Structure formats: C-alpha cells, structure tokens
Amino acid sequence: QVQLVESGGGLVQPGDSLTLSCEASARTVSGYSMGWFRQAPGKARAFVAGITWRGDITSYPDSVKGRFTISRDNAKNTVFLLMNGLKSEDTAVYYCAADQRNRISSKAYDYDSWGQGTQVTVSS
Image 1: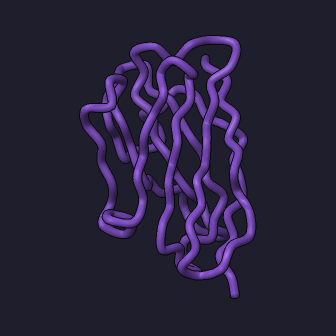
Image 2: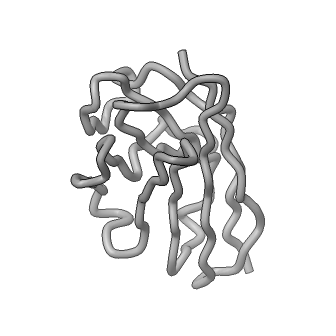
C-alpha cells in the first residue's frame, strides 16, 4: 500500500478557493491513478475527481464540474485539487486515494490506498 497524506483543508467563506494537496510518501505512486473523495457527516463517501497516471484523463461528477480541477506532479508524488467557487454543500472531509490499476473509478472500493482526510468547511 501507498501512504498518502492530505493537506490544505480549512475554513473558508462561500465563493472562496482552496487547494488541497496529497503527497505519497514511503513509496512512489508511479503508474497509479489518483482520486479525490469527500464525506460529509451522515453521508456516504462521494467521488469528486480522478486523474490517470499521465494526467491525460480526468473525471468529475456534475456537482463539481467546472469548479474543481485535479492535477498531479509525478516528480513530487503529489496530487492537487483546486476548488473554486466553494459552496456550503462542499463542506466535508476530503480524502485522496490511489489505484494501482490506473483506472478512473467513482467507486471507493476500487482504490487500494487512502489518506487520513483533511477537513474543508465552507461557511459565512
């Protein structure tokens, strides 16, 4: 398994932007696709973005399309999630995940490794 560490969460106001980072440590994520998920209290973990190893394919659900952008820097074993136009409904714990099969899946069970999560709170 790959060790993943998220950072960048915090408290922001509606309309603000925030960038989350996910760094793989102890082992490279070479060849892995990466995903971001979020989980709000009382709700299931939901897919918000995915990217292939080479970064040539990305995917987003309609709820964040046009507002969120996933990217990666393979030289630094880091994946980013740029979130623009944040809304109160974006409040959740955000997790990054790695899939050694280099797929983009919206299903949490397809991912092999997970980070511990970072809290994002959008509130005025």
